[in-house]
Amino acid sequence: MRHPAKTHWRRLWPGRVIGLRAVFAAALLWILLHVVLFAGSGQIAPASSFKVLLLISAIGSIAGIADLKRNRESIFLQNLGVAPLVVPAIWVGVMMLLELITAVVIR
Amino acid sequence: MEPILQADSIGKTFRDRRVLTSACVSAAPGEVVGLLGRTGEGKSTLVRICAGQSRSDSGWVKYKGEICDPPRLSSMASGGVYYLPESGSLARSLTLQGHFDLLRERFRLGPVDELIDDFDLRGLLAASTAAMSTGERRRAEMALVFYRKPECLLADELFRDLDPITAERVGRVLGILAQNGCAVIVTGHEVRAMAPCLTSIVWLTSGTTYALGRPELAWKNEYFRREYLGPAE
Image 1 (cartoon, rainbow over the protein chains, first blue to last red):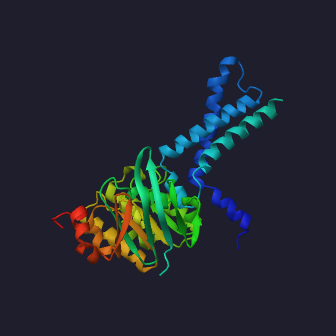
Image 2: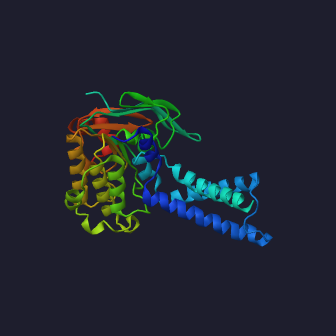
Image 3: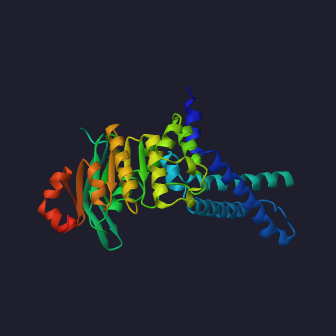
């Protein structure tokens, strides 16, 4: 029998194909954002501030929702028992994580 | 038999347009309820509210005896609800095989091979769902529903744009699902195609619903004939 906590986490994961695509797309967007927004100022990875984290999470959630709508995944995910907001949450999570890792490494 | 899904006293207003005043619909295991009504009367709105895709202004939705406040499809789906919206339920990012795989993983379902042959989907397994025709998509959706074996199916405009053979096949699948204990609520205008699989009819008009009973009784209802079916039926 599966551990209840494991089952709970499985319910949050939208499956390998959708989940991994969201992870890679979010990472790619994070890299692009840094190239476009910050490279001009001579900093590839600026020291993370609250404002940067806020900006990253706003962009991540908008991109995640757009991705969900573009691929029309919402209804199928809900039929699987997965809340559709999990996909934007993955986008935000990945981008915030990369931002925090970069900040720690640079310091 | 006790209804598995029940929506009662549902009211909904879009800006200043009151679409539903006090609409009710319910389905018990083994029942195929046809929710019929003229265009713009709020059939899709009522089904969307039952499926947690839209909030009602008043009323309640009960699933398996418990009030869902608010109804959420992701929660109800874990308990056996499956929703087919008019716009389709397939994800563009997945192949048909991908859909079957995710359902199998999530609900620990059995092999799918026989089902794929029954629904004549072998050639579509690796295809992107975006490249499928309307009929193929509906066939694929019905195969997924059949594979999932839901306890309650909410299907909006299920028979729209289907050729007669596919419509007959979809109707047959609904019948089999009901025989296996699934409660079905289906909307649409394709009365001839829907009639053979329906066990009861609910007529939605002027924001409220009328339970007309079995199809043969509904056809005899003079008011329903005059206001919805028309003289040709």
